[in-house]
Image: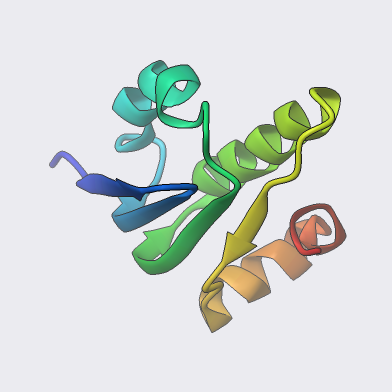
Length: 96
């Protein structure tokens, strides 16, 4: 079964919706350079599920921004995603 991830871009915000997991993030990852060129915020409030691979992608994106001296905010973190961030010890890396 193929997981579904979709996104919409509005000015400096990218909103992700659906499932962010190992199966769904490949298309997004391939397009990330173009998609994220003007993005300052990613809204994850419409994600219904995030697995450890999806979380790793968010950490990687944040790190890429920092290495380019750019700022990226992650908004709309659900309780489940917050718990996953705490379990993996990456909450300080993702939250401003």
